[in-house]
Amino acid sequence: MERMPWVGGSGHATASSLIGDDTAGYLSWGFVRHPVERMVSTHYGRRRNMREPEWLSCADTFDEFVRAVYEPQNRRRMFHTVPMRDYLCDSNGNVVVDFVGRYERISDDWRAIERLVGVPHSKLYALNRSRHRRWEDECKGKVLDMVIELFDDDFKIFGYKV
Image 1 (cartoon, rainbow, N blue to C red):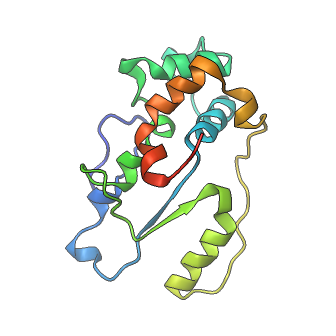
Image 2: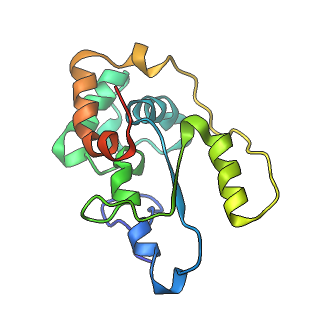
């Protein structure tokens, strides 16, 4: 299975690397999250859930975190900060999975997947929930502009608004 070579840790496979002739007839899906909310959540959850990379050790505030990730050499160093386009689309920006669910409506979209697959409903449980302010209160001005630039394709492809 092909992995993203620029992602540290265990790596995350792209949908393009997993979908092929041997997966025909299987349902493929992925979940996306509002890009700014994803960055806010990553910032607040990163120290609790991940080994802190050296290049992020001085990024205590959300603004410092975004500025560190925004640096060209850091943009693809954490799988949580890689645009979902890279995971769910081909090189032309075409979505390659059958179903794209949204974190913002995860329960409803999970039910839709269960129906498509034909399995009974099972409850989803929240794990690793981070506590933080709404992204609209956390991310403003130049920092918001930086996040929008980093995730420009995700806003366009998955229809998120600022």
